[in-house]
Image 1: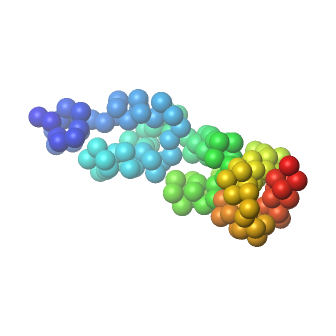
Image 2: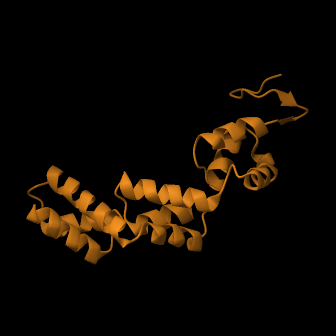
Image 3: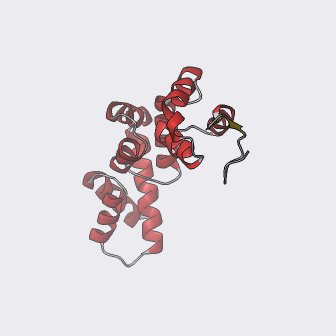
Length: 159
């Protein structure tokens, strides 16, 4: 017996997702909310609490480790600012605000300034004739403070 869209064999009325979810979690850092969504997609949302408890206990899911990886990746590769990262961690991934702020502070102010400079430089490269105010507004939408955005735009304009 197979459920539509599922690769799990049925065990009674519930699907055994434990080995599949462990494999999925081992491939990359996952947040508790991502686990919830994946189990829901697989039709096993009712097993969330039990499965998440096991994953947390076994170290497959670790909110602190996820927050660190998410913060690093989004600062480094997406040039997001602190406000946008905090918002995504707390509202999308259900990571506590304290944990999200800790992960961000571990990156340090230098990483944030560097991400702002990269973001401003990339934005300026695509819009060389745009006003300074538009550049600062774009940086604010990426989650940078006005002061940080101003410094980054001035540095990008000086180049």
